[in-house]
Image 1 (spheres, rainbow, N blue to C red):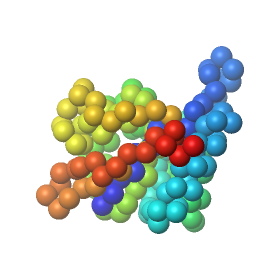
Image 2: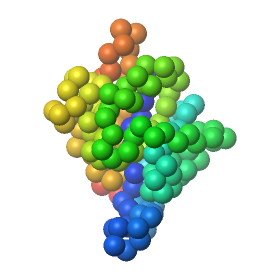
Image 3: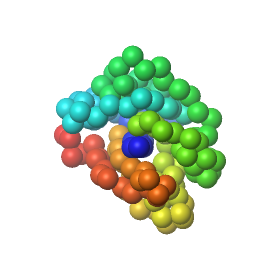
Length: 154
């Protein structure tokens, strides 16, 4: 099973718009990421987001490319300061490739927790619009397959 962990695209500052929608750059980065994932033949059975506007907008764009016809799911366990261990129990019940759109510092802590068991030793350099692909093996351990940051697709 593969888990694609995405930090939402670049969002407006809270002072500009308290809802924090994606900026023009954020939309463009997510569209390029969606095209890349689609071109690589990636398909997922589930798309989960935090419910925050920037994560919803990112999830919708990516779902069109990698999960056509799949209804997006909202999770209350993947907000910026949530505990990655709470989401970990949910990942054990996942048996289908899944894309999760969330926020920092949560996404970076989740990768560290799943891969090395220590959420405080960050091992993935996320930035807005990044994706990390993890794979769970039959012995239940996770490994990083690859990571793409937006500047690599520009």
